[in-house]
Image (cartoon, rainbow, N blue to C red; front, side, top):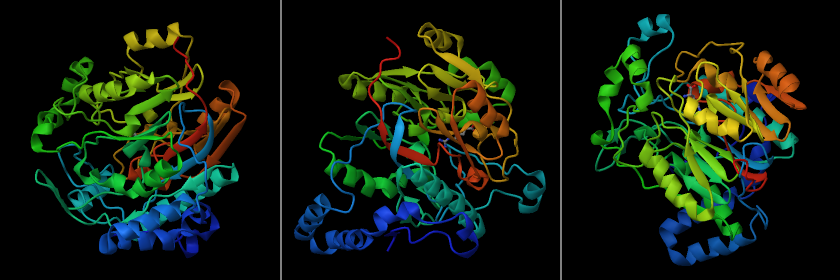
Length: 433
Ligand code: ARG
């Protein structure tokens, strides 16, 4: 079968920090779901009804609610990504990957294809599983995406790719905005079906929480004419010259956004135009969320010449406090709005370990990709001592939890990227009155 439950934590060597705290929740229901999945295909609606009824009193319990208005409310439940079956992202209009290490570049000659090595997958899974254990230790219930075979090629009427990617950066595919889950309109072809890895979680939540809204942005065509390929040919000088246009490798024909281009401050959310988000995408969010009283703003970072995802650039730490990237200041016109409303910016220092894994397509600023799990409580990569001190001594964090996470970096993110908050104890605060 293409889809199965993630079986167990990494074996053997990984036992030291590994574990499967996060699997408890779903392993108890694995049989039930495995059955219903097949039942749906082969037995039709009768079987499905049984499935629904069982789920109503299912192992997840009653009264679960989807709720996350901010980046800092007490975290109660979240999803943590998995590295299983990860493949190298294929070269495509939304991503032309590069090998960072010049020696390896010479040896390999070109960007690798197909599956990543099992060693690389196990190393990332070990750190992801450890994050699960740490979260559970802090009283956060964790859920995991389903394991899927990402080595399958994809063909739609409008594009084809040789393989898919991985369900590690769940932050990119779906976001909770208040009581609404929104499936993103992503730009990468190898991520077209990544959302399927968390669909069971969405279904469960939606059944259990009668107030939850579940939205999916229109699936982008990902046809060639959705992209602006000429952008890839621009030199850094040209990109610098055009930086105030905020035009990147996607054009503005179809609404496009990754969920990680968004950050939440209660009644207000902020979205960054980037390589993975266009103005049409921001407008789609604005129209969808306006009826709920949510204000959607754009946030511009002109000095990031190849931006994607706001969570290594502008990291909300709590009410009126933002961790900012010293190399990617927010545009002046945006800064004013924040300052008028009493917000303070604290610049992050340079990363303690700026090294990028050879196959990472992210910047050294993954160092800033911290996970705030409650007021004054944050998880930070263990090597980033400078940032840990800054958070403790200048930003009012009383609990700073360092954990190893560098083996996840080549999968496109760090602690914030690898998670999706499904429940925080917070409200629709108005911090931009
Ligand atoms: N593009 C960002 C950088 O290189 C990395 C963003 C990672 N975030 C994420 N949600 N995957 O700085």
